[in-house]
Image (cartoon, rainbow, N blue to C red; front, side, top):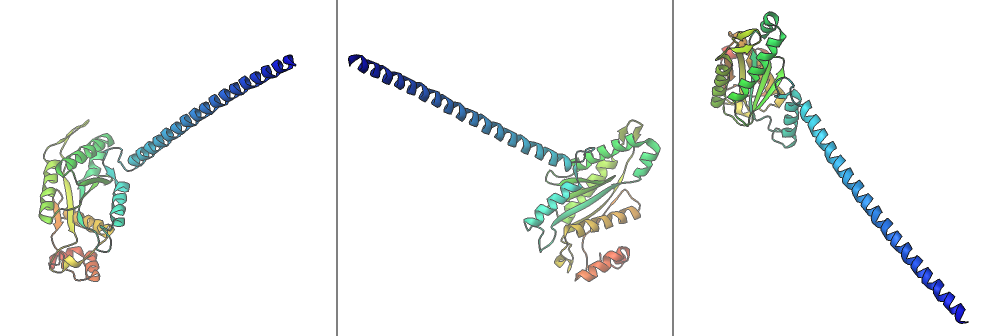
Length: 259
């Protein structure tokens, strides 16, 4: 009888030790699983963070001109869309100043001195434009040898002074290229929006229309001999139809004193 009781106690002790070992093993397995889950979550968070960094980098690269490192047209469109969504350029139209800058006779640079010299000219002109404007102004390589400057808030008189600084900055000193120093000038068209004047302050344009106006004034600067800036101080138009008519025959409107 005593032997049976001893065997039973031994069996109970053995079962208890086995249960303890199983419990310890299960606890260790649970801790290991939790550690693996934690490591996996940490890696997932790091991967997501890196993916976001890569996406931001790709977006930044897609909105940056690779030659001049200025903003490109895509970035400008994104800025305008953001302003539209924030209602800065909503029903009341586009607010701010625009300036179109075009390198004079740039085709001759490429034809006579080669595309490497042309690239050097574009890069240096971009640098000089950037140096002549404010930190808050957006300088965009609009395409080819043409640049756009967007100033969120800048009155017409200050805009004319900025245009003069850009002209002197570009044409003040020759640009060094592999083909030697080249003298370069530019033409500028600029305007501040909404368009002013006795009744022009009521005219509201979207940014696309504002760009067209700045581009139209640029071509007037070229027609007048290049190496100069031409700006719009006021437009005498009471409604959209009159404004459209002025755009159709801008030179006549200038002669008639409507611009």
